[in-house]
Length: 126
Image 1 (cartoon, one colour):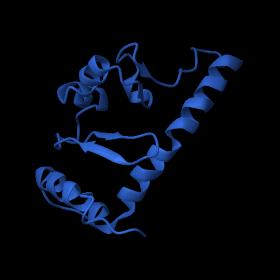
Image 2: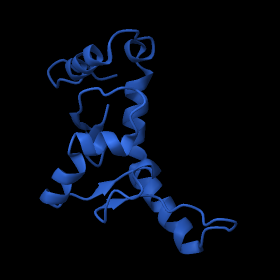
Image 3: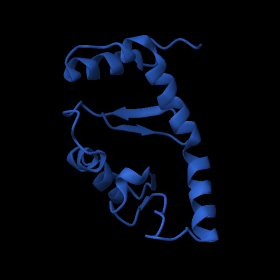
């Protein structure tokens, strides 16, 4: 599943499930997330799975072959990591729920369950 969040980690959109072997960048393209964000001018902060997705997608810089990243590269990667922390924390909280850890049902049914759990009227604060 692909997830779009706001800057504080609130989930704005969940994709329908794709087969588990689908690469993250392939899934983002299949659901047209990148195209819609580019058209709307929404900047995207993504992990390294989305390297090469386009100019509007900011990802960490990889280490050069047989070398170390530059000071600028390390600083940029740290800043990106800090900006993504609330989103990663929100996803970790979601994955910590037992219903998601022990699920053995169809991914399509899991998409429906996830959307139901995240419906604002049904959410309870922890």
